Length: 595
Image (cartoon, one colour):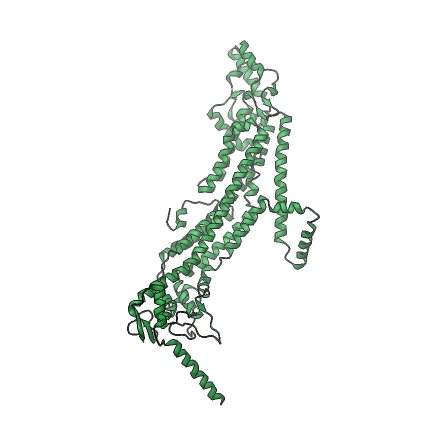
């Protein structure tokens, strides 16, 4: 009795499968064509054997599709394939582009704030002397921005040129009783390495600024270029074999009135792994790119943090200027020894005064040099004709002037400058300490017991500077930290993207996972389970793909270009990570050959 019931159940299942596989009429197929193509002229009135005339949907025993309907089905299959694939790639490309835009916006805003902070502090500290030479400092920021924009500027040379011109300007002002020609000023600049008028400020500023700018620009360019690479890959047309396989999976069920059915998961995976066989070649290089992006991001959050270099640049340069002022006499004597004795200016060719009246050429309140270093007594002497001296007296006076070089800034004014700079420096240190505390709390202890300490510490914040913590989280350092964390999270989420892509397409309402209770899925010819072997990942494993034949010896030229660009970009990121220069001469390669 039990055996009879079992046989009856098997026969019933086979009968139901046969009924599902063989349409009794073409009504449902006609509705599908009317809805999707607005054309039913190539739909048969009654099901017919298809193997004689159908090329794509010919595996079915009976069909309602005429052979002339297949071009419509193939077109629909192409559109569906491109829609599903392009949606994934377009979304990913858009994400990288969006993150690049956010980083770019933040960086430019930060650089602009640094420029404004620099101007405000130097105007307050140096007054008219700064305003008359402000173009020099504006050019520095302009050159830094130029590097960020185009990458064809050498940061080290920018700083060397800046300090070279600044040295000439300050040396001229502090020795304004002399006349210096262009040749002499060149010698002044050439003496900088030996004289070190700014102390170690140029060296301490140059290396961090260079590696921070290089890493920041490379990181944001990598985001942009990754977006372009994805957009270029999205232009790849499917192979003819892929179109046939995808159409058979998604459109051919309609020829049997089964348009509502879904493909078996294994069947879908074989189709998509065959269609995306060439794309899978990107996976290894893509993951290597993501790994180095994560490393550069950590550098930007740590030793290469651009904010910790650019924001306090006003303090650093001011420290160098004060070092020059405090050692102006020694600096001048060393330069005179290297470059020769300078010539007195026209208004100085007279007998030297016993003592300079510093108040006549330096304004304590404004912090600026007045009258180019000439005192009032000298002016009166010119009017009284006291400068009619013979040549021998002039030479003696020049020697006296050369020996008695005076500091350009009196002690009281230097102290006022130090107070302004120290105040600015203390504010920056406070922000850095707040950022360090936040990084420590974010990294947190790795064990559970220490984690409780974090919670207790957060609770204690209510009684110990909670307002400071909130202020810290609203500050620029926290904002930059949060921005990079967000970008890093989204970028890291795309790891193994090309390996996962076939699975994502099949899991997105295209296929159904077969179970013991549910075997009613489209296997390419009928509603039944899929018995063929599912291919492993990677292009090499698609040689025996039963659904989409793949010629593994015929690479895609467009895809190869993107692989090359990805590898080159990874190498540039490695250089940036190591603090090395990054050359952008072949940047057009990263845009698929576009300039």
